[in-house]
Image (cartoon, rainbow, N blue to C red; front, side, top):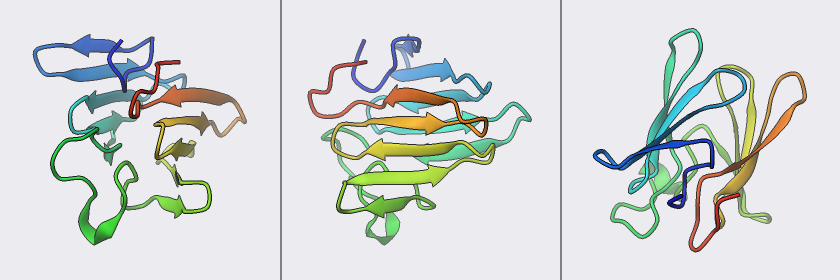
Length: 123
């Protein structure tokens, strides 16, 4: 699978996107070139996200946030991670170098994710 798409994801080669559904029923679609995408929650709410592109133009976002961390995210410079909570209460932590991280559900369930990184194999 191309970097940035988990093994359960579906690649749309025409649009260069990856789509998958997490255990909480959130439908996630990511542009594999830019790292930008959406999370559609079970109630229909849509949240934009930016996991950062790999080597493309426009790295980073407004306000100087490092690539891969949404504006509401918190950067831990010591560990080079981005942490944020989505509208459903899922705590998401992503290693900004590797693109790997975890989603901790409100019930305590932890799911490994791999948004891709330079040379990072899909897990």
